Amino acid sequence: MARVHTPRIFSGIQPSGGLTLGNYLGALRRFVEKQGQIETIYCLVDLHAITVWQEPERLRHQTREAAAAFLAAGIDPAQSVLFVQSHVPAHAELGWMLSCVARVGWMNRMTQFKDKAGKNAEAVSLGLYAYPALMAADILAYRATHVPVGEDQKQHVELTRDIAAKFNHDYGTDFFPSPEPVIEGAATRVMSLRDGTKKMSKSDPSDASRINLTDDADAIAQKIRKARTDADPLPGSMEGLKDRPEARNLVNIYAALSGETPDALLARFEGQGFGTFKPALADLAVSVLEPITRRMNELMGDPAEIDRILLAGAEKADAIASPIVAEAREIMGMIRGPR
Ligand code: AMP
Ligand code: TRP
Image 1 (cartoon, rainbow, N blue to C red):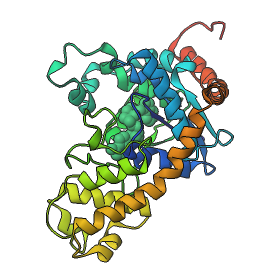
Image 2: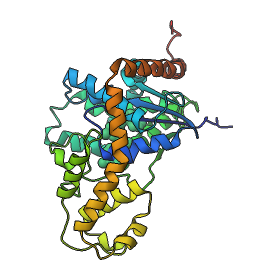
Image 3: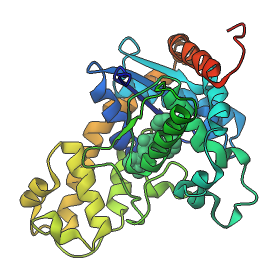
Image 4: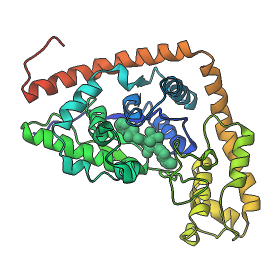
């Protein structure tokens, strides 16, 4: 009989810049909702961040700031494991082992790599190419069964399933689960405020394209006021926004923030223009984000406390992952070592 794997959530965010409203709605807020329902493990994936150049002092700052964002958004270190990837050696170790399971042809299909490498594919780091194998290791080192992510990560979680299946098949075992991507809600893909066809990203060169969790009320209101839209009034349902990506994005953001369905929201705003909609959206965004930003600022006033929380989280994570990786080593035929 096949092994039944205990339900467990794992997810990660790269500290490669300040977190955005996209990270909050697509990931962070949903991480908080899962807390208490199921075992939850959340990771600041600094080893992923260095696949592209990171200035060392900035990386340290951004990692603490991302931790502050998790805590401010409601992650409770007593209920969730919150830690930094590089503090737990199992990730890099299993990452190598799984990169010997994954096939080059599988990596070549990864759309995020193609987007990030662009025309420059020969000059990017080897790590950027191997990154999906490390992500598989993040998930499988905990034998996680569910992975809440935004839409853009679906392909990587599916690759993780392929890697787990090949490992299980090659070694005649049912050791690894087949983790499921959990992609839900109105904001699985928040788009740029400047271009409704690009996702909102912490690495976009234009700061006006995104709302950062560190932005104050004035900055949020100004970015929403200047967000690209069209001149037409809002229709009565989402059907009418099919060819209006910028308008659709703002409506989805509003719905995700207010907890309404986009159609219910449009029933209220039908016939109104962005002159009315944008100020309402700005007020709503500020009311949701301001308490989080305030709490982040307080937490950043005591970085030593953040470090203590992260180190305690790393111990808990290591206690789970280290025996799992030791067992994987044994399955692969390595002589039992000191750990
Ligand atoms: P990253 O910022 O790439 O480390 O992403 C961390 C998490 O946030 C992943 O689950 C992403 O899918 C999610 N995410 C990032 N950007 C967005 C976005 N614009 N809309 C929705 N989810 C996002
Ligand atoms: N690759 C993810 C991103 O860029 C971050 C990530 C790394 C992750 N490891 C993970 C997400 C494991 C979920 C599970 O958004």
